[in-house]
Image (cartoon, rainbow, N blue to C red):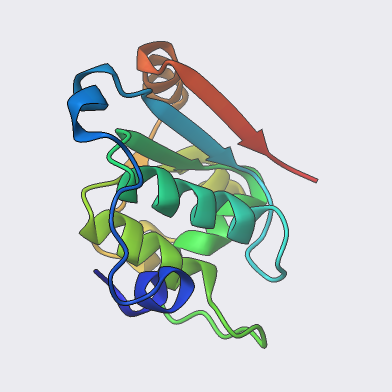
Length: 141
């Protein structure tokens, strides 16, 4: 478990589910379309995705529009928790982070500036990921 997860949930964070129900877990996709520079939108989406993954729900995060800034290496923010660090903990637990390639291009962000382990995708992969989910939640302004 990563440092952010430990701080948010405690040293003994564990799934809050009955393990007999694991076979029937909801598969989530969270689409984050807001920049990572405050405690709403991107941070909330990342924190909820981390919690879902900790509770053993198969979860994917898609960063699009200004949400792609949450994928960047070397972020500097004034908030205590960085969204990118929450996403790294999420990935350490097996969560997938997909990043909209067109959104990166529109913002002049090269793909080599994205956190290792995040995958740059096109709109077709975005739609396919949503179609495979039981529930899609959109975080935007």
